[in-house]
Image (cartoon, rainbow, N blue to C red; front, side, top):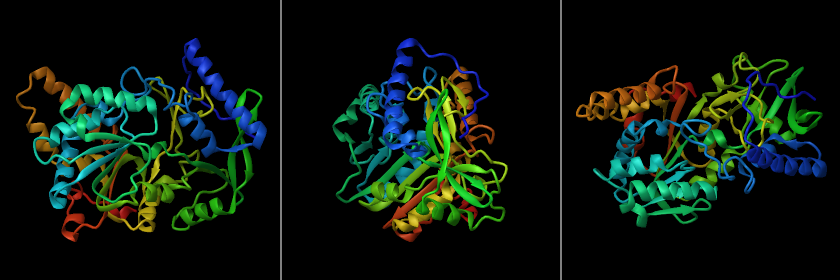
Length: 398
């Protein structure tokens, strides 16, 4: 066994939040007592989604200055305005279309996107796939306040639609919150890193890696020029194909757009990334200890975009584009969007320029965040001509 380690000093939560975390911890310990060491995906599932106790289901503020992190659309509406240009192109090719957004966060992106699309080619309806009852309420309040004229065309889904539809499936910073498994390499053998009880909380427990998981890891490593060596540990999403099939299976014609932080596989499993990509956020502090304050800390892992492309092939989807967020925004009319702010006051333009830098600079979100488009049923001139990927299409890197 080895304990997770974090060099970041985290502030103590208020007493009521401590009690919430302790309740979740007790539920986790009960599961471990009954089943033995649990998979990290089971731990992550409880930490994020346990009803009433998990990070996304306990009603805590997560987004913005008062939360634990700020997502791209919390900076302003530049992302939404550019995204609207891409959606409008797809919508025009389809005629009538709708949008389904997965994990809509605070609802700000949906509100900004609908506002921008209202001026050009709005969807017939907007549906939100959201498993958190608390976030649904936050989204409803945001949308009611920002776009009340849309409320009769906005609805929420408990699960992906089963009947056929056409349009755009949007997932902005969703894939990083899907549960992953952890593993470690020893003398070319692969061990699974499970979660057990330790003397001071939870700890890692090395166990025999299930054959199916081991097969997926070895398949992922088989194309790498420099496969990871002894002591290397990282993550793998073993259920990505099943998840993608669930959310895209009923899409008859249209595009799924994924925006998230991640890498193509040869960068994801770089030898120097020897501790994996797992990252936790607590009160705007990033740290590496997923066992600290369960339920109060966000846990995520970077996206293997090569794995997403492979999953798309298994689900009958075409990879129609892959690029960095900065290049995607440029292709989607970023310059024209910025030109539209010329009438703003000097102070407002300064704010917009700060927003622009956060979205596009390599040291901010510009390179770290990637965009992938998966399509089905579109004419080739549409699927291969998506404007967001015309500036730089990086599919060759997959």
